[in-house]
Amino acid sequence: MSTAAAPAQLEVRGVTKRFGGVAAVDGVNFEIEKGDIVGIIGPNGAGKTTLLNCISGVYHLDGGDIKLNGASIAGMAPHRVARLGIGRTFQIVKPFGSMTARENVGIGALFGSAHARRGVKQAFALADEVLALVGLKAKADQPVSALTIPDRKRLEVARAVATRPQLLLLDEVMAGLNNVEIDEALEMVRSVHATGVTVLLIEHVMRVIVGVCRRAIVLDSGQVLAQGEPEVVLRDERVIQAYLGERYAKRLKSS
Amino acid sequence: MIGTATSNRRWRRAFLIAGAILAAYALLAPLTSLEAAQSANVPLLADKLWFRIATIIAMFIVLATAWNIIGGITGYAAFGNVAFFGIGAYTTGMLIAKAKWPFLLALPLAPIVAAAFAALVGLPLLRLRGHYFAVASLGVGVAVGELVQNIDYGGQPVFGGASGLFLPILRIDNRGLFFFYLMSAAAVFSIAVTWWVLRSQFGYGLIAIRENEEAASVLGVNTTAYKVAAFALAAALTGLAGGIFSQWNVFINQDNVFPIEYNVQMILMALLGGTGTVFGPAAGAVLLQLLIQFLGGTLPISFDIPFVSADARPIVAQVILGLLLVGVVIFVPRGVIDFFGGRTRLSMSYLRRSLRETSL
Image: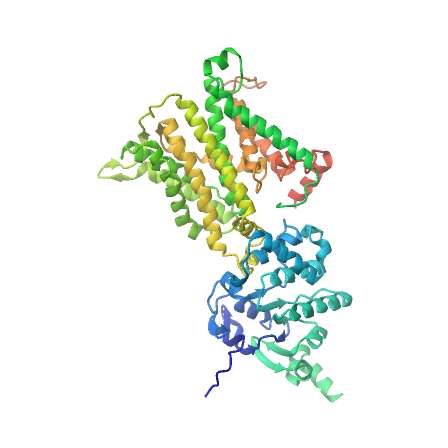
């Protein structure tokens, strides 16, 4: 039946994660093709970050399977997932506080993907390249404490990019930024994507989803509500309801 | 901490040179014959008491430097490292006293057994964080000492029991000199290991774990393996010091190789000198051990504490030590190595800034 087509880069099959009686992620299915750039949106508590934690191995799954290039990565420790080539950022940035920006990114380069392992010297050379890519070159030797919030978000991305991932998971890297900063961050995501990395990003800012994503997946109450082209998905009635409430959706429809 | 631009390289060099000269003097002075040195009034190490103190200082350099690997670099406040000291001491002691092994053959087993034990208890223990880990490791430290003293087999204490374990005296000339050099070699080795760790991928991984364990793991650091390895490495060095101590002291029991106060002392030395640095714990060990001996009245240069009788002296000495250390932790949180290294100068503004940082 199936042709010898290569499996999707990332396959999420019936992934479920419960906390006590609550299913934060409940039977989620989707695929991401290599080189794609996909957005995950959904109201607060929809299970977006939980899903990311499932993919990156931070959480153990309660059900379902996750495959990278056709091989299951479910149940793997985070460091093994990272070595297979999945990089991620945290919504609340987690920089290594005592280090400079360069050293932070150097850690990513020093560890990260198994196929790209390198010595300390080469790792820091790569760190410099990545810092230039995200626009932090001038601040390479500054301690983290001296960086602004937007810069710390950039650093978070740079550290993940330095692991040389094939798939990059970005968790709300634009949250809390102003419009100018969002434009700069968008440019950064585009340039990272242009290096050949597949990107899966969680975002609340619709402008980002429409501006950069080829596909959007809408999560609500742990389930996939809709997926498809961003413009189409965002006009979906159920999506508007989930975001803005039933009453507002009705009013929007009648007007 | 690592690689931050040093503002004042000249100070740093001066500090290193001064340290090297002092270390060279301490190491070479005993080589001149003891009688000659005494008649020439060379103060340091010529005297038997000084000699013993110098060996103890070297021993604490090992303990504090080893603690720094797990506590300072990895950020896991181990409070039971004395267990590894005792295990090392009893490993070497038992092999010499019961199995009649020669000392130099029995010594390498001390770090190996201590590291193996650390790996074993480290796997469950290092899942705990913060004060939970500190308390659990303290428990292990106490438990091992009690076990060693109380394990019986067929009505006989296995490890010498409450009366301790006597080792045959090593039959060599200049025993004191030999053990001073052996302990100093262990101290230099520990510092060299720390130096290597801080420049290796291993060390970067450990620092990443200290700064944010979750971030380290998603960047590809095998946090469990790294933490256990750091714990085992610290245990190996600590066990080595214990192994040397057993043959040097000839007699070991629960009190002298599992003293709980060593746990506190090695941590305070590392804090006083500067955690996470190469030389900090060693500098702290020298300063604090000299202070302990000074307050205890064992140094030739002594003093009377006003209004305090000789009986109350040890207690008052403890109080002074405690107050001093509270002051250090509050006002010099990065350790005195910060000044020696020439990165900062001791000033009121430095103390005020530190106070603000530590009182958050």
